[in-house]
Length: 411
Image (tube, rainbow, N blue to C red):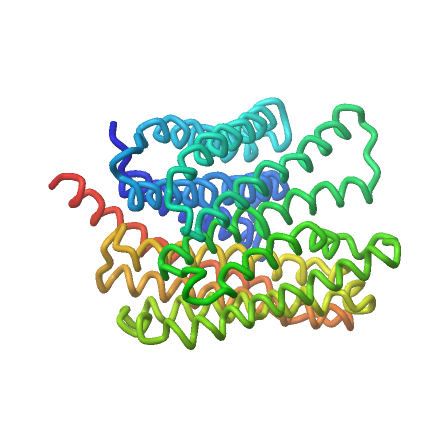
């Protein structure tokens, strides 16, 4: 079978709907009584499937499609079908096995195989990426994305080592989890999205030298920025300072990059439909908030509060994974007509974004209130309501997008 991005993106949207449904089920269990399924097992299934079945799968598809668009003649992309198939099998394996057994033989096996699939993708993709023109700045972002995806697995292997030896120390355990998460969403996910954005906007160093500088600033600050996730530990003063500098560098890099894009690409972006401009603006605002929150977390008192209250951590993770990564991916799919949009798809994406906003606002209010140990009435039911909006939005988007894909594949 020849590589067809539409075919694989159909699974992406189904998987995002499954992720949203799992989130809805978890919110229902918190707000109401529902004894079926273990909450912790649902959480593991939700997070692992979101990473592998939705985000990683879709980023791989979009990065392969980028290769196809840029260099159709000399590349054979059929080999990626095997990688994507294997990844989806493992993703669905994790989805089911984590729900049934939590961390057990099957779920750990599927998780481990997924890591090796990511290595296979990285090796194959980097080889093909070299065939693109040297002035293509997306190459740097994609190469870095693959690099961070691979090194993120170190955190997983450290966790496995601790569990096998039954020698788990709380700080090392948390540091390993945050290591994996950081290099996934601030490394692999973010750099892949930036590579796609650079290709979409056709950004060149000759147009503005800062486009290349942006990559360098984010790349070299990404590694020390990991320690933003471990500020609760007793870091040496020099490392704390380096971490704060990394956070400051990312604020500078993002805001200068954003200002240049607004100045140079405004006319180009106004040609796109309103709903796409709205989604891109939503993502840009969310990213702006994220880098400021990172910088704010370098203040010791703020850091202790943030890491001490679960709603704050959950709000931050959903800010990154939903408001930035997921919405950008949806923007990219429809802006590039990888799936053609219609009124119902547009409505679905907008409803989904409203759900993201409601979820963030409620979690933020809950987090701030928890600083003073104030209980927000009906907060669990409000979060359940936000989850319903999320499911409704992505459900509408997925159903009508899949209809579009089926029509296109039958032509």
